[in-house]
Image (cartoon, rainbow, N blue to C red; front, side, top):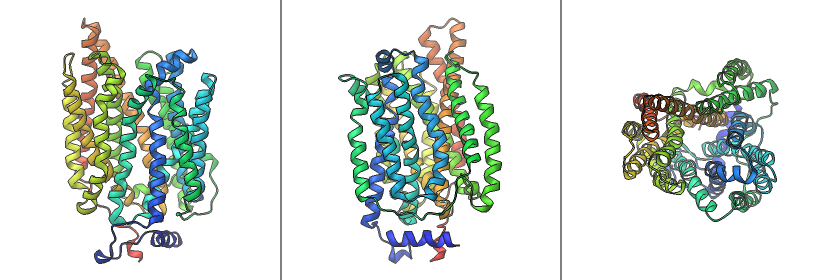
Length: 497
């Protein structure tokens, strides 16, 4: 196939292909390292920005005079934009080269950051967040697709391990840094401090990033874009509304956007199955033909749901039950996030030598044990226990994410890397919304029942949180079973040499 040959030529030009054990090199070409390093730094910045808003919402509500129900749109609008743009990124990465896609993503992010910093009203701030999200949604698929294109199979584990730093350390640092900034500065400084870093990455990328991908001509299917927007936007919004409804602040019944999203998703799948026969699909579903991609994505869904649910519930528990302030909560959860990210390169090297199973199976067991331990939380649980369990949970997730990313994307054909990356990003967004909705609904429902039975508010809330973690613990058993089926993918495309 022409596309396979071109993709192989790109890899051969930029990074030495794997031609046998004696010829393998442990280093990438300087041009490849530069491109990947720039993408890693840029992705770190945009994901860090994504997580600073939660702590800042009370300040923004006071500063702009908006209620909590309106302020939540800063997060909801960001998630909706991500859900709409990420599926389109698969087409963009096939149609356009690395350099223009990177410049477009960082320009949008920088422009959105500037709009947020200057916003005179809440509406302008929401618009800025939407523009920011448009750039953010492109960066992670671009990073993963570029790594799969430039890095030979025997080095992908350690390179993908660097993505774990971006995906784990940035969210862990976000709330802590946000709390530190807000303790001495106005909320607008959350954007003013990020802007020069984003502009520096944009400028350096404009000067140094080269085109490393192989493009294919084609036109975008407008109907697929519309169906994608309604499907993924509806599901994300509906699942988010489930959590709001549990708190009694939903503006629409959650089942309406969820049902609309499910119907649109079914139509979207049918449309893609028809278009992919002529290689015109917006999101090519032939990636799921690879069993390891399907298993990996399913596992990532469970893990991301557990991670996002935990991120939501643990701060509620530490602040409303244990009485810690937001900054103390951020510092309490910081070690786990840092550990998860720092494990990435080490885990990547082990993956390159031993494969995924020796990492994924122990990781799944640690995640399950941690979630079961969180079902023991009570009104007087020592904060050191929460810290320890969160560190163990983070270690388990750190053992799993790098092997799953590498195995999943390494299982698909090279010409489908961009679609695989887009699907992984889409699944992460859906899993985050689903995990948050599940944990919050269970917590609120159980807490309400315990309150009606006469328990004190703190005891009832602790009981609701325990029940929510019980649901997560049960789901984690599925991840443990699935982990035994993960294996190293065949090195697709190596036979073409």
